[in-house]
Structure formats: C-alpha cells, structure tokens
Image 1: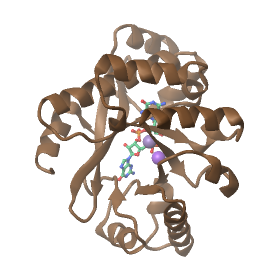
Image 2: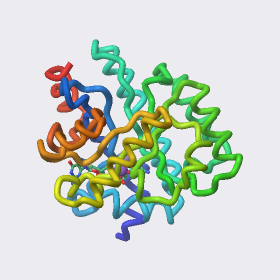
Image 3: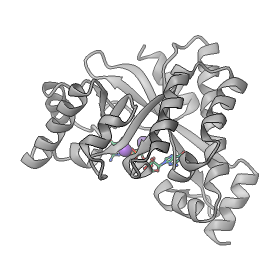
Length: 254
Ligand code: G
Ligand code: G
Ligand code: MN
Ligand code: NA
C-alpha cells in the first residue's frame, strides 16, 4: 500500500496519536505550556516521522482533515486536563500552510473552541515564516482576528525563513520560537551564538515572548538564560510524551 493510501486509511480510522512536549520556565523548571506533535504508525507498525508523512498528506489534500482532527483533539485534551484539576496553560498546535490559507480558518478555530469549551488563551497556533511569506493584508487580517479571539500565535522555526523585519513588525503575533538548528551549537559556534542573541534581542525589542527549542544540555541552557531567554523546550527537560505520561510529568512539575 502506498503511503498516501495508508494515510487515507489512518484518517478514516483516526489512527493517529498526539504526543505532548513540555515547555518550561528554565529557572523554576515548571511547566508553562506544551507543544502537540502528531505521531503515526505506518502500515508496517513502525513510527513514520512527520517530516515524511506531512508532505505526503499535503500533496494528497489530506492535511486539512488531519489538521482539523489535531486541532480538535488538542483542545479537547487540554480541556480534559483542566477538568482533572491541572492548571490552565496554552498548548501549541502546528498549523500547515494549507490550513492557514483556508478561507474559513478563523471560523474553524472559533468553532473548535466553542465545541470543546476551551478558553482561547489556552490555545497557541504555531505558524512558520513560510506560511506567512506573503506579507499581504490577508495574513495580517487573519492573525488579527485570531488574536482578537484571545488565541496566541507563535512563529515556529524562527530564523530559518525569510521574514523581513519590516514585515515582522506588522504581524500581530505573540512569540518567536528559536529554531533548534541555532540552539544545537550555540555554545561552540560564534555565528549561532550571535544569531540566537539577535533573535532574543529582537523579541524583547518587539515585546514578544521568545522560546528556545531543542535545548539538550545545561551549557545551552546557561547560554540562553544569560542572553535573556527563559522559556525553553527540549530533551534536557522532557521528550514529547503520550497524553497520560505527559500528565504524570506535569503533576511533578507544577
Ligand atoms: O515531532 P517531530 O520533531 O518529528 O516533528 C517534525 C515536524 O513535523 C515538525 O516540523 C512539526 O512542526 C511537524 N508536525 C508535527 N506535528 C504536526 C501537526 O500536527 N501538524 C503539522 N502540520 N505539522 C506537524
Ligand atoms: O518544527 P517543529 O519545531 O514543530 O518540531 C519540533 C520537533 O523537535 C519535534 O519533532 C520534536 O520531537 C523535536 N525536538 C524536541 N526537543 C528536541 C531536542 O531537544 N532535540 C532534538 N534533536 N529534537 C527535539
Ligand atoms: Mn513546532
Ligand atoms: Na520549530
């Protein structure tokens, strides 16, 4: 069976899973949010990485249905955690370009919040720079509507795209996520160190939150903290985990 057909079947059977990776305040090591990451076991039963199946889903026109499922699932799950007594925190969902470009995207988001009863502040949307490459009025308008609802917006993989500073200034967003490719060698590579410092400075100047991804070592953590970034995500703190395991971890990191 082709990957595409296997994905079609997985979608019919709702055969996907979501893992959740903690985002922490690096000083207190407490959980301040999470990112939902899609997981799928392919026809052979082994995990297929999203970097492999998401592009196939995009080409096959399946990403809208998958994305809608992810969005609803995450909102439902976050609401369930709150009902179980866990604190209200934002959980981030990765949004693909096609999803964002849907004419009724804002309505879809509003409808999901309504049916799941999740507060808008508890949902964060991660968009890449490429999604918003077109600096047209439409993107700005859609983002404004999303934020007027109270939903948060973060730019994922920041620094790997092409957004100009003038464009960034016009975009109504809440946070920049420093791409893990810059964090990896931040302690040993002067260029990466300078880029990371620049992104943190830019975020502060523009009054945006900044979160570092792919933090794996205490040395990276120390660098980031010294540079003024305290929100982090990475294996140093926790890997992405299935929902039940994530909730257990959370109860230990209030
Ligand atoms: O979890 P992992 O590092 O394998 O994720 C790889 C890529 O897949 C990341 O770029 C991430 O943004 C993307 N991804 C993970 N989950 C989703 C999802 O639910 N929707 C979309 N569109 N992309 C996702
Ligand atoms: O592109 P995006 O930022 O959405 O993808 C995040 C990806 O990074 C996920 O696939 C997640 O599994 C992965 N990830 C999270 N923390 C770490 C880390 O500390 N090191 C590495 N190498 N990957 C990580
Ligand atoms: Mn992401
Ligand atoms: Na990223």
